[in-house]
Length: 493
Image (cartoon, rainbow, N blue to C red; front, side):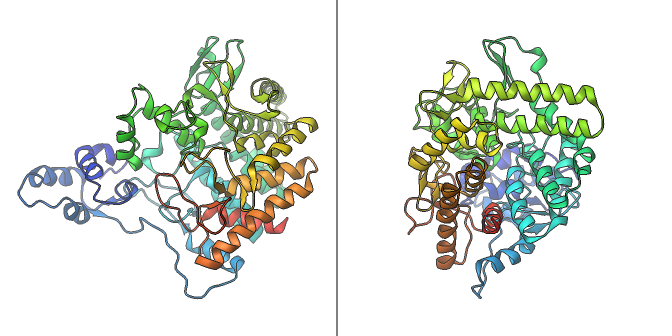
């Protein structure tokens, strides 16, 4: 039987299950594995659903397997935190030799984040690799790179996560940075030439459609400004409720008149920031989400790094024409980052509103990317460091925005990726004291929560270090891949 698109194939049943809220978490049904051919399940459902006394939950649990829908680690002995993480690497390791339900096949073992997230995630995997590097688990680092390459070669990009319903979007493009991380470990430049074709394919995905663009227009992930400059944005090919948050999206859509509300929601998911006031026109309400109107500073910095890596891999193969092409693209993008994302009024990096031709008001931690990747000059770096110290650093780590909206990618939450980006960004420009403060504030928060709960969390409360973080569409998860990775790597620096 084909499970490739089975959510679409059981749309009537899926719709009924998600609307009835028989599961507390809508992701349960997207992850379920059918125990019988789809046609048979549909046929039995249509026959049974209108019979008096029909029990929907009983029907679903009889026809689908929900094993492995959640990763929860319970350990009786309270190990030292680093020993706990070393054990977690094995407990969070998965293989997917064949497709099961929505789960995509992958050639190599991989690490899942934990909690409700029991599949391979793209940008999470980079931060997981930081910890694998610290643990000396080089083979698993190579596995992650190989899985990303497999997806880029077979799908055209790395999906948000390794499930069929994520085949309409990616996540922040970290593949070139993954290669850097492995190179730092092995000192073998062949890693770049080995994956040159993969790097080109990922670049083609992000730049798809640019040749058709006129000034002041956009297509897919590419934007051409009124002055004819090329920038990129997050995007999703689908404009429909997300299967994993189906009812939430439908209910939010009912409170807005936006034609592309669902696509704006999904595009924010491609950024990894689902959700934040960063995307909201009014800075407060998800109904005003306008991700598609923005070119984002983080994405454009990551694509600059991809262009630089392609120039490097071309040079290693004496492909001078390609080396020149990608070097020029990178040089141009570096200029554009300065023109479109540097806000002289606030001395900080902001996103760019492509419809209003202005910087957005949202103050957010993605301003770290030009420092993390060495794009900013010293004066810009000093200004950003001042903003970070004054507005973003709290006793429990770096927050993501300066606004408390109730969304999980807003104040007061501190997320692992940005503790690493903050630490590295400050180190890059010689702000060692601030780097150490970022590291120590967050790591001590992680250690405190671990001491009290025996768990490593998906996110942390940076302001009130007596509580556990909240906000968002689901409870705080434990496991947790990128927290483990960043914590271990920070402890080595």
